[in-house]
Image (cartoon, rainbow, N blue to C red):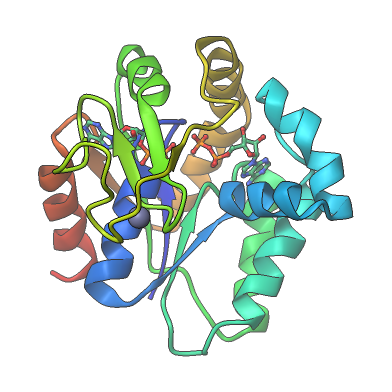
Length: 215
Ligand code: ADP
Ligand code: ADP
Ligand code: ZN
């Protein structure tokens, strides 16, 4: 199974992708995570992406599609893929079709997380992750069960993203509206889109997604 999780920054894509990984052994392909990894490793891609990401703008289509192609090649053919934060433009959507077709894969679902824009800033500024295992949390909506300790790995170090501030979030939302939302009608015409209420609590969103991927 190959699915796209689509929604603006803070919609819950990463949170739900992690849950799908845990439940179904699928693989999360997050271009944001890949780009942050490239920045940390100091690769040429990372050097090019860093300033763009700090401004909240989109990294070039060629870079992110190449990252996705490499990740797909590193996966077993039977492992399902969850595309998280990709595609984000019409050109990326076309590339994804080609990348999948070349590997004998097809898209099963495009799951759109519908959220009120007003809620996104609060979600983004309260977001943090475990520095050891990457599990995502929120100060208010999804704190660790024991304060200061990761539920998943027991780690005590957490980190926040430099682009998770109110100003950058506004740019990222504008990019979503202008460049990403317009790819939805194409998927709709192919009968692939399922909508989920992303304003519901995390468990309820998971249940709604579960009903789509494993009816
Ligand atoms: P995205 O990957 O779409 O940018 P995340 O999954 O990282 O979004 O979620 C953004 C923040 O909001 C995280 O801190 C997460 O814990 C929190 N969050 C995710 N889903 C919900 C939800 N349904 N209700 C409340 N908070 C949520
Ligand atoms: P969020 O889900 O909160 O928007 P991501 O981690 O998906 O954040 O993306 C963070 C940043 O990385 C984006 O603002 C953008 O600069 C860059 N990025 C991630 N994925 C893509 C993509 N598919 N195309 C272009 N830029 C991307
Ligand atoms: Zn952890």
